[in-house]
Length: 198
Image 1 (cartoon, helix red, strand yellow):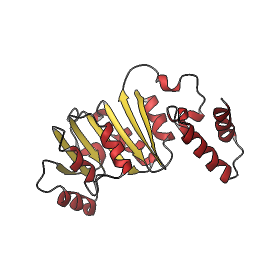
Image 2 (cartoon, rainbow, N blue to C red):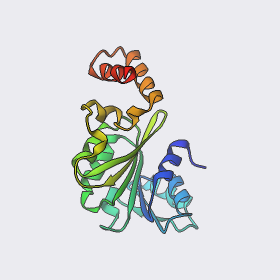
Image 3 (cartoon, rainbow, N blue to C red):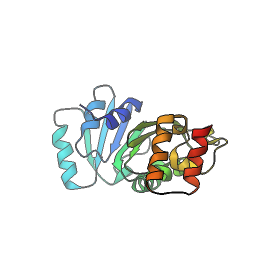
Image 4 (cartoon, one colour):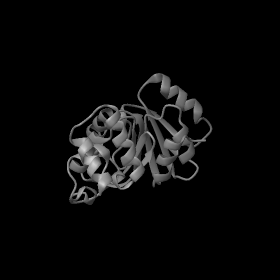
């Protein structure tokens, strides 16, 4: 059974051919293989690679050893997930493998997703959905043309908090309480205070 954060990722994956980078325990590929045509799990460290290979043994999940998208061919998959890493690491993986990126990216960073949102907007990936699985965020990004309408009329603070999540009052209140607990009195707190008041 998947954790809430991985279930949120699985629910967004369209496929039908999917790659999960940094699969580790193999739980997400195991869930996806039941409904997708192709599932590839990628690991770059020997220990996690072996753990994943053992976890998916006897299934149709294909496990590959490699660094990020280096293990994939261009056009081989329709969707890609990366979960449980820092956003800067994720951004670097996406940037290095940019020529092999599929139309859908489902990402679950372990820290603030601002760097990923900025990268996506600069590289033609629009936010379709942002899910908040406290304390994590899951981003569903799709290749598109033009500027991402999710950011229309919003300040740079939207990169930090997430333009679609700002319509969730529970999320906004939690973020505001978190900033207050840190003693923050900067523009981010003012931004959220205005959102609560609107």
